[in-house]
Length: 164
Picture 1 (cartoon, rainbow, N blue to C red):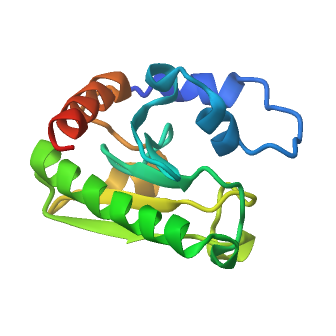
Picture 2: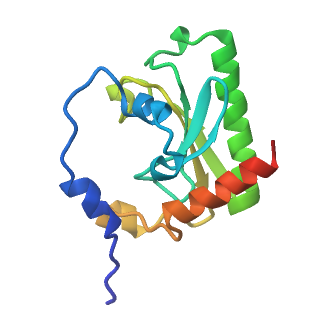
């Protein structure tokens, strides 16, 4: 039997966890100018898209409003519209770049709903392919990504810059 390794996961496992803060990880990314390190692939007026650092599948994007809130009702109509328009645009770019067979798109609001970041809502866009569910996530609790996040982020940024 051949061993599969996911060495990038150890960085997350061993990294010191940040102290609790009033500023979410998404607000920190929004305020940063280092889009390459943070895997930000596109920025709009009221929201941005970032690759999930611990994705379910390759190309797993998060669409995040700049406003830190855990409630859709706190977004203005303009912010909500921008969030959905960027979600649609990201789906189109992922379709061109990665050619998935389908998508899971949605929000997890609150701990009971599975939210990993409780204080800053975000939309997940998860590309899916026929047969992409296998024993790795179920039994081994690992996901095998065929492409490094830095490489995929560069491809997505290039496609976004061409599709403005």
